[in-house]
Amino acid sequence: MLITKNNLKEVLFENHDARLLIQDVVTNTSANLYYYHDIEISVRMAIDIYNRAYKADEEDSFYSVSLINYSGKSSLAGAAVW
Image (cartoon, rainbow, N blue to C red; front, side):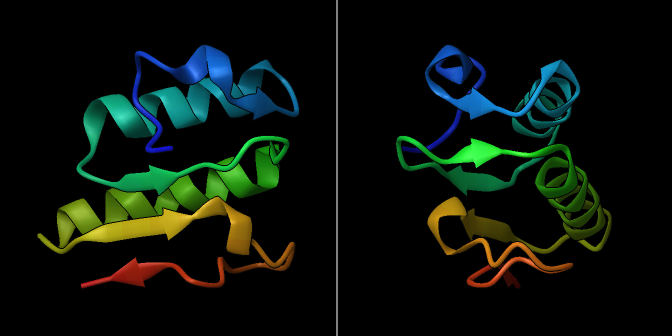
């Protein structure tokens, strides 16, 4: 599922801070975030996504990530920035 501001209620978040970061990304950037049920978006993931999405927009490039591939480390596996 592509995360949009209209379907955020279907996404599992670690806490409200993570929700707010992802809400900001889907509202204010061109990033594509693909979500799979039962994956919890942590604050750490949300911060990483936020930073990458805004950096891609600043560089006029494309950012897309499948959250099923999140490695739990400092980067997102499967993330694409063009």
